[in-house]
Amino acid sequence: MSCKINKLEKAVAAAHTFFVGNPEHVEMRQNLDYYQTMSGVKEADFKDLEAKPHMHEFRLGVRLYSEEQPHEAVAHLEAALREYLVADAECRALCEGPYDYDGYNYLEYNADLFQAIADHYIQVLSCKQNCVTELASHPSREKPFEDFLPSHYNYLQFAYYNIGNYTQAIECAKTYLLFFPNDEVMNQNLAYYTAMLGEEPARSIGPRESAQEYRQRSLLEKELLFFAYDVFGVPFVDPDSWTPEEVIPKRLQEKQKSEREAAVRISQEIGNLMKEIETLVEEKTKESLDVSRLTREGGPLLYEGISLTMNSKVLNGSQRVVMDGVISADECRELQRLTNAAATSGDGYRGQTSPHTPSEKFYGVTVFKALKLGQEGKVPLQSAHLYYNVTEKVRRVMESYFRLDTPLYFSYSHLVCRTAIEEAQAERKDSSHPVHVDNCILNAEALVCIKEPPAYTFRDYSAILYLNGDFDGGAFYFTELDAKTVTAEVQPQCGRAVGFSSGTENPHGVKAVTRGQRCAIALWFTLDARHSERDRVQADDLVKMLFSPEEMDLSQEQPPEAQEGPPKPVEESLSGSETGHKDEL
Image (tube, rainbow, N blue to C red; front, side):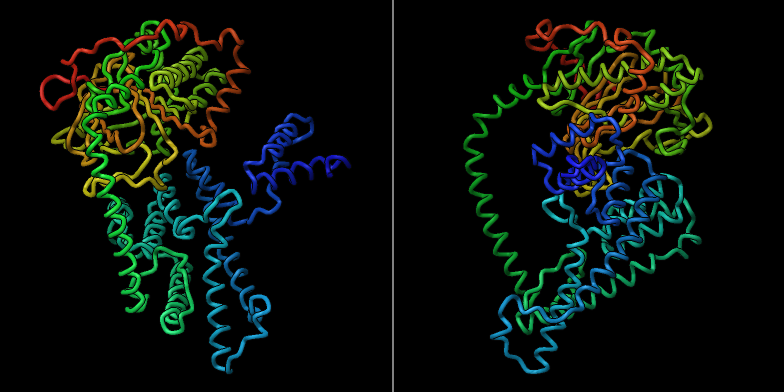
């Protein structure tokens, strides 16, 4: 309607608002696509008219956090916290109304004064607790955000760490631990921040007062509601997972325990039955599954000169590959010169010159920054363009080799050099980059990897392209989930690339660089277009502006049919065992 009466800005906002709550609506998606092509329509016009301020700030902060912009993320996440407390106060105030008889039940309601007061008070408390769910809900999500308020402090502690503000990182970590005091990862983070800031100043920093008041009030309300559940039989579903067990009455605990045990018993019986079925077919299918997996991974390499060096079988894992000849020696040297000319100390690692170990310096540059420096004449523009093209080349090769049905999108790209600090190598025992998993938080002792923020959970595939091998150490290696059992190693050299899926099947690390400089392009990819790297979109636009279509083309790509057929045989002597000579990334 707004479009028909020439109120285009309102039409765009109305369409966007509807689409936020109905993301599967095809016609509205088409309308939005049409509006985007119209002159006079600005990006700012696509606004959600029903957006809650606290949720808008939170989602924006999380997006900036995911894009590795911690300074900007902190501002919006702090704003989200302030808006959340305001929204919570408003929501709770609305619960202070008259008793809700639920339709016509007031005709049959019969209670004395004390029962009526108790019923009303229980309803008010239950309504106030429900604010937790209401404020954590968003039209685009089927379920509310779990542990919504504590998650703010989780994001903030890591964002503050990334910008080097250990005081605020400690405060937010301690605040998060109010809700989850036994969280192993957060306790490890707090210990690290305390060591960096110093024991004395860290001791004086406490959790945020607003969070302490919120938690205490919530627990008192929960105690009353659980009491009402236990004594009066008024059901209460706790919206939080952080509630301590001692808040729940003993009888309710025992009841819930017996219900859980029954559920576990049924689940175990089903699981045992499924295991028996699996055992019957496992022997017959194992060999065929291995063959199909290898076949699935053996897609075309697309470009002349690229050769398969190690596949998943040789690398003792799954979704792993090493290939050589991705770029030439001249291109390696040009990109290495670009790194040293353009990179800011620590760039790409939030300004930290030694983000993983104090024994090495890191220097890096992103694709977009390199192109901007080239545009400004501070580095050779053709070198920056080579960097851009090489990353696209690796993306295409990985997408083809792993035979992905969904396109790979750049999540983050970084040309980085690690340089050994000569005076810091004596009796060195640490790694250049400790064992980790790219899309989850690895707990090696428990042999689990938790796929939740602040991990980059949207990353699906990773790749590293090496520019040189004239240094000591710096071996790339895969491990089991224990972070100790090495399954394969690869030695970096010019033009060699390693690619792998980013999940729990591929924990990996980098051994200490003890002499010289190790340079590589690190790439992370996602299958979810929503998490596509913003810098990459800007880089794409800049390349279109600076170069002709002919210059933008990636030459030398072979037609897929030229690469059809099984992968070339791989020498078993390249196997990444723990003894003997190993090739490493």
